[in-house]
Structures are given as structure tokens and as C-alpha cells.
Amino acid sequence: MTTRSPLELMPELLRLAIDAARSASEGILSGFRSDRLSTERKSDGSPVTEFDRNAEQQIRAYLAKHQPQNWPVLGEELGDDTRGARYRWVVDPIDGTLPFSRGLPTFGTLLAFEDAVEKRALIGVIHLPAMNETYSAARGLGAWSEATASGGPRQRLQVAPPRPLRECIISAPPEHYFRLAGIADSEQQLRAQVPHLRCFADCWAHAMVARGSIDALVEFRLARWDIAATEVLVEEAGGSAGIWDSTHTPGKYDCIIGSPTAAAEVTKIIRS
Image (cartoon, rainbow, N blue to C red):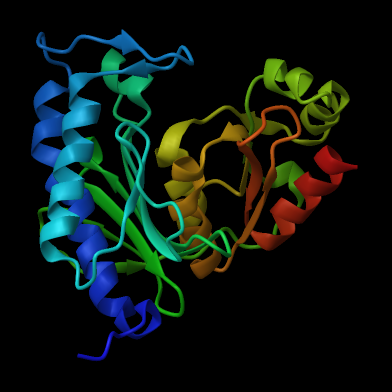
């Protein structure tokens, strides 16, 4: 039997990624705003719940059962079995565990399929269970959003149009993270030039960049599972996804994503 390359399977893999990301939604939502929810701390101090681990296990099982080839998985909670593989799945079962544990609806499931050698995502899904929305993209197939349960039409995603920086909504983390990166002055310059500077968080904010609601977003110290799906979503929505090795946390990434014009302006301020 001839093995087909992932590039030949893109529509099939995109559908699989959407279904796999959604497969854990019922279990995740059973813990949302529930008395059964308890939070632990991982070795790095970040929060985790049994719903994170259970969701990743369910997504891995769904992929194992339905994928056309046995591609391995890099996951936030259950580890990395992808060493040496050219292609892999990348999963964050609950991106935004802290807001999830506090009853905020901005959490979601991130799932990407990527070329691990090139570190380039080919397919990306952001599923927002509490908001009943799924954002998805594949190289050459565009970026789309759809309601999870209604069966309504998909909407083509497009990043924000060009506009002056003073009219843009820009999302950036608190000044503390700029100081950790050794660029505290950049935060002050950004604040001086952007009247609508906000601090949105989690994969919801990434989805809003792809939708065009947020013009550009800055984040520091991301893991690969935090940014892989977003990379292809934003680029297929016509945007720019600047991702580089973190200047202050080895093995992590910093990013500036958004409309090409807004991302370029923000990059000039932050990386100058």
C-alpha cells in the first residue's frame, strides 16, 4: 500500500483535527463551574486539573482510532512521544486552566498537526467549548469559524484591516513580562502609542486575532502547544505570525501575531 503524504490528506486531517478537538468537550464542560473541580500545581507552578489530563487522554485516543497513519503526539499533560518523527500532533487539552478553574469562559482546546522538522504547523484548531465555537485552518484551505452544535454555516476568517495604530486594539501582557524579557522600555513605548492596549489572554484571544476583532497580540514564554494551532490560523486568515525563541526562557517562544500592518508596527516598537 502506498503511503500518502500529509499534504495529500489535508482536508481529511482538518476534519479529523476538528472532531478530535471537540471530542473532549463534554468532559471538560462537566468540570466547568463545578463543585467537583479541584486544582493542583505542576512542577513549574502552573495549574492543572483532572479534566486537563482526562481531556488529553481522550483526544489522544480519538486520534489513535481515526487517523490514517500512526503519527505521534506532543501534549502538555501527557508528554512527548514524537522524538525523531517528521510529523506530529500537538495538543493543549485546556489552554487557560486558570480561567477554567475560576469559571471564566476564555479557555479552550488547541490541536495542531505540524511538520516537526520545520516547526511549521500545517493544521490548527482552537475549540472554545464554553462559547460553542470552533476555529480551524489548514494550509491552502483558509481559516474558518463555526458554531459547534447549531450546524450553521462556516464563516471565513480575516484578520483586521489596515488602520492607524492609535485605532487598533492591541493585546499585550502586563509590564512584568516585558521586564523579564529585558525590554521594559518597549512596554512603555507601546502604551504611549496605543490608546486601546488590552491584556486579553488564552486561546480565545488568539481566535479573536484570526477573526479580526483584535488587531495584534503580543505574548511571551509560550510552549509549542500554545502557539502551533494559532500560527496556521492567523496566517490562513491573511495575518502575520511572528514566532521566535524566547529571549528569557529556554525552550519557550515569544510571538507577535495580527494583521500584517498592526503586527509590523508593534514589532518595530517591541523588537527595536
